[in-house]
Length: 123
Image (tube, rainbow, N blue to C red; front, side, top):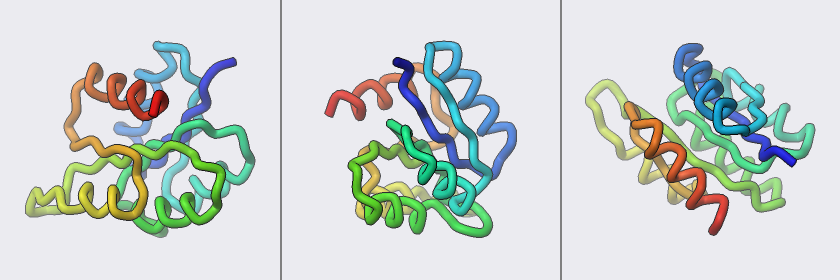
């Protein structure tokens, strides 16, 4: 059975690139444009991994991570972020504190993303 990955990112290009990367290695991908959309799709069940951006309109990533953790079930979460306008990656540290299993700074290399996914899913 294919692993199901929920990608939550408001940037169409990032979301599409992530989806294509994961589909080429055999993952089933579900896309969401923000935290509200993502949480709704997560509640549909069957999600093995959530990859979420931090800075998004509507419901941002930290709040989304917190709600995913409160829902129970132990879904694996990887937070991604390019930082804020100053380039600060404090958001990734905060994501880990909120319960993300791992983090990845944008821009990232394909092999780094796939290695993180593999490590998180084995943990």
